[in-house]
Length: 319
Image (cartoon, rainbow, N blue to C red; front, side, top):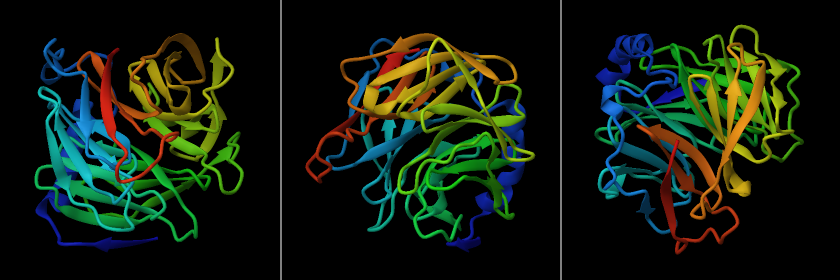
């Protein structure tokens, strides 16, 4: 693994201290209660907003302020939308051959972006849109760096084509950690996507990863994966993005056009199905992010033509 750096930034160097404060404050993982900054959106706030034609969205992230950041599979650009008005603009310009799949916003204003088939993790300044750092995570011929979660001192990325997680240091210099997945992990067949969304476990000791219709609890110390027993449901087919609030886990099941809501035990050994969220506006939703009492989702529209003229949007539903 190598790391290629664009223009050095003080925020890359100084971000470590900020990231440490963010983790201490609980911003690295989803929390059960909304913060003051994440008060309930007003009834006049839109619940649907457009993206540029041909955007090919898949990832969405929201921080403590009412702005959503959405990546493009078409060229790696990032779009920022004001949740209060639904109006947005391109924050980070893309380039041919790039992709922005999953992404997460850190408390210090850094966006961590999964690079898909490029095998990279990029760090973008969420204020200026400047590319700060590019990490080459793998030299494999056909990777797919899919999603990311911020937990403790690292941003953890899934590779849907390999049984490994990658940990990128948050807001500081340092080496990328490769964590091979062992134990009960069942890797998807060659050429198909496996590991996708991930969140921290309620006890903070590991990560919950969705893979090939199942949920796994992965130890960050050893990489050993234990399959989470699903009660009230047999699988999470087409599982994509994950959101965790306390012990409540939201699983976006993209082509099934639904979100299943599960109760985790403290150690994330079992998940009990509580309810299912559906909405007629869902058109293959890929990932979700929470702000206040809403979940915001991007419609990837995988079953529709993926052309420069295809329209795309994001929608909000109550938690």
